Image (cartoon, rainbow, N blue to C red; front, side, top):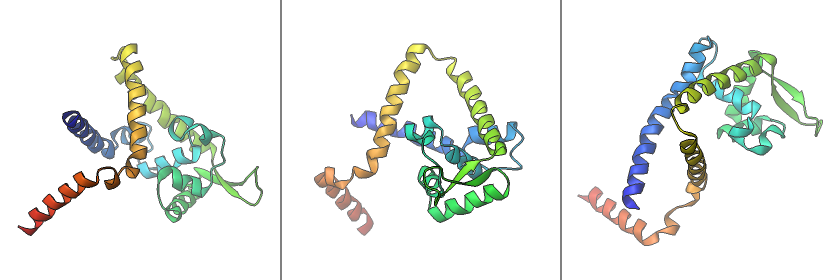
Amino acid sequence: MTTAALEIDAVIQNWRRRFFRRDLGLSALKALGLDSELDLTQLDLLFAIRGPVNEYGEDASKEETMVSTVAERLRIDPSRASRLVSDMIARGFAQRAVSQCDARRTIVELTEKGDAVVDAARKFKFLVMGQFLSGWSETEIATFLPLMERFSAWTDEAPEIGAEHFPQEVADIARTLAKKYQD
């Protein structure tokens, strides 16, 4: 298991570095002629306002999107989400509306312009990923997706998995580290 964990970690680290460059999102903005109008953070914000089911879960498309919802979906501070949303509203990609569930609440929705951007970016990503996956067999895809979902679910739990699960091992690692710092 240790060898497998190291190999998985190496693959994840390499993928993470490529992922953080955000090549696919940057390519979408450039190919669609949006790179002078939007950056990746703003594109992420538009996706968070829309709340696609396949990205944010089944309830995403059913719930109304508030600024706090955007902050939660993007895992950012609510004040930052508020500034980003205000910017998108000022630029015509989003708008404020009154909640249909509670008239005292303000929700955020995409405008036609914002919807068009999200739709176009999703279609671009689907084309690129579809082309890549076209070299995979149905069996490979059917095997990969559930495993990827299972592994991804673990990462949601990972912050809760800490030193309390391996107290002796973590204490040994900490002692070894402390000795290296003392030398």
